[in-house]
Image 1: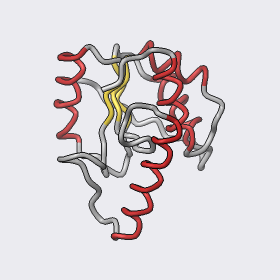
Image 2: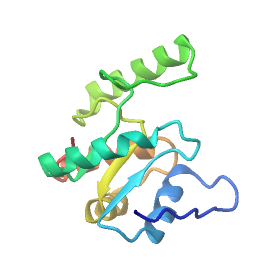
Image 3: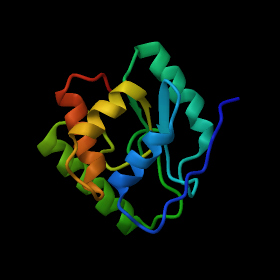
Image 4: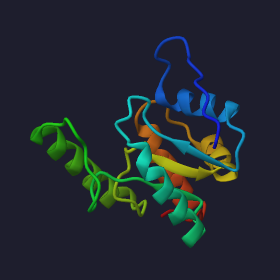
Amino acid sequence: CPVQKLRPRAGKLGLGTAYKHGLQHASGEFVIIMDADLSHHPKYIGAMIAEQRARGCDIVTGTRYRAGGGVDGWGWWRKAVSSGANFAAGFILQPGVSDLTGSFRLYRRECLEDVISRVESKGYTFQMEMMVRARRAGYRVG
């Protein structure tokens, strides 16, 4: 069974710094990033691993906007705004993924280290910039 470790931080320091903090403590060949409030169900991790193995992806993304995806507890307005913003950003940035702001992802560690080192954003645009930079660097995303 893989080992999970909780690495708390002092206060809200931004999403980008949270990714970097977690990466400093990660030790495996692959790193899975997900929200700590379990809004991403761990039961999907096996499918993400299977996708990585089958396609040799450097990054496997979870999505709220394809069949089988979704968000529990969001009202229709929040879903509409989120979906619309992801569509617009995807149209402009062309990252090749349907969910630019979702944080349920599996990364090959070397890919994550490289992409994080290139990212300049600190807040929630961090996730979008990561996917755009990964795609432009030639990483395989599934």
